[in-house]
Length: 114
Image 1 (cartoon, helix red, strand yellow):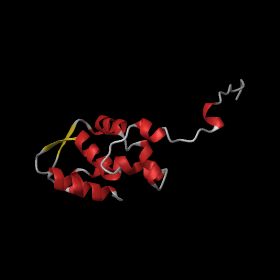
Image 2 (image 1 turned 180 degrees about the vertical axis):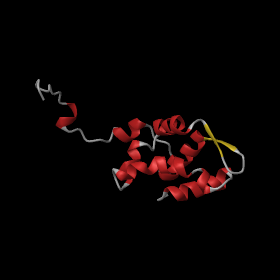
Image 3 (image 1 turned 120 degrees about the vertical axis):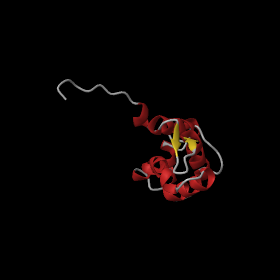
């Protein structure tokens, strides 16, 4: 999938209602495209912890325009699976592939007065 609206249309087909019922959730998952305009943006929210974070942001459920109550977690799982080949990665799945750089683990004491 390439656009949050396409995900929203998919949610409407799956759970009923209109794409607009789901748009904010899918926009949230893809807001990280502001940082990386390629697949790397997914490392920030497209994982199991991101799905639970979406639930904290949007609540446990939404009620769509058909009156159906839909778990936000299901919507998040759908989004991540659609973007990650049917798989829900963990944060570790993404981050274990980060190449270590020296600055990542170098401590630093800020001199007084700065």
